[in-house]
Structures are given as structure tokens and as C-alpha cells.
Amino acid sequence: MSKHLILEAEGVCKHFGRLQVLHSVDLQLRQGEALGVVGPNGAGKTTLFGVLAGTLPASSGSVRFDGQNIDAWDAARRCRAGIARTHQVPRPFLGLSVFENTLVAAQHGAGMRGEEAERAVRHSLLRCGLADLSQRPAATLGLMDRKRLELARALATQPRVLLLDEIGGGLTEGELVTLSALVASLRDEGLTVVWIEHVLHALLKVVDRLVCMDAGTVLAQGDPQAVMSDPRVVEAYLGGVPA
Image (cartoon, rainbow, N blue to C red; front, side):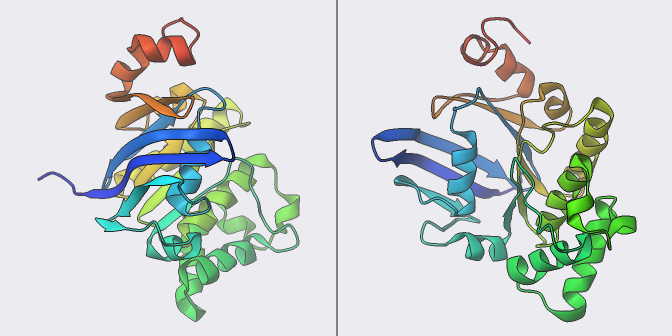
């Protein structure tokens, strides 16, 4: 039985003044799918995430979640409905502990309180390998653990759709393998994932389907290997050299 569409963008455009960053982007995401998004810098990938997550309003077009138009929903409402995201550069509250950072996400992102919020926090920290660091100040964490914390905070909101923005950037190969395995396990557990990433070999091991963007448009989408072999993708993203 086919899985239903959980998140859809139709004809999404975004401009900042005279600069148009997204040009009529269409995107469909099925429940339990892992979708990769690639493209050169400036392709509009992070802007698309902003529109999907509600931190940026679309200039035109529409976004639907579980078949319902959510254009009027702000980021907080979308988060509580089940759309969570991470950022390219982790943004922890440096004066708070790892546990407190994640608790803020559970309480303010998902509206949980008391024992329910603490259970969500403990589960997220355990899932991300941070249980032993729960009382560490976030300011003392290295990059890998800050990436883990960014992911744990998103998971603490108990999302149905997780938007990952270059979570592998800046990591060593060993750290990237560990983090990619975590993302793959989340997908295997049924979480719907959209992952923007420049580290292609890590991304291609995890995603079921791939979208390539360039200059605010979708160049190609479908089977990951087919997309990476598409001449338009090779030219725009790989400089004419096949992956």
C-alpha cells in the first residue's frame, strides 16, 4: 500500500525585494520517505526549508501538510503540528546545559510540560548519543556534539517531518558516518526526512529519492543515481564531471 503525501509544495515562489530566490518550486514528500536535496550554493535550498518550516512566508504558491493548506501557519504552529528543522550552524543556548536546551524545545516547540517533556528529552538525548552529556553546558561542546544537540532538540518536538539542513557539514569522515547512520535509523523507524547536504556520498547512502535545485528551480528529481547522472545536474552542480 502506497504511503500518503505528508508535505507538499506547489508553485512556491519567494522573492526578497527584486531578488527572486525560488521560482515555482513543486515538491512532494510521502510519509516515511527520506528525500535528499542537493544543489550549488545559492540554489535556494535553505530558503525552501524556511518556507516549508514557516520561518519565511512564500511570495506565491502553497504548502500543504497532511492535505491541509498551512500557508497561514507560523513556524510555531507548524512545529507543534509536526514539522521540525535543524540549521546549518547549530544554535544552542550556550548558557544552558544539554538537557535544558532540549527541554526548551520540548516545552516551547511541542507544548509539552512536566514528566511528558522530560521523557521526550531523555529519549531524544539517548537517541542522539548525548545521554552522558546531559548536564554539560552547551558552550563546552565540540562541533559533532553541537550537531547532535541540534538534532536532539528537533527530535524532542516529536516531529512527523524532520528537515535537516547540512547537518554533516564540517564533520570528519568518522563523525559523518556516525551521524548518517543515525539519520538512516530514524528513517527506518518511519520518520519522514528531508535532508539538504553537500556531502554527497553520505546523503546517497540514506535517501530514497533526490531533488537537485539550481538558481531557485528544481532541475531534476527521482531515483538518486538517475538524478546525479542527469546532464543538467552534472553541468549545474558538478561542473560537467559525472559523479
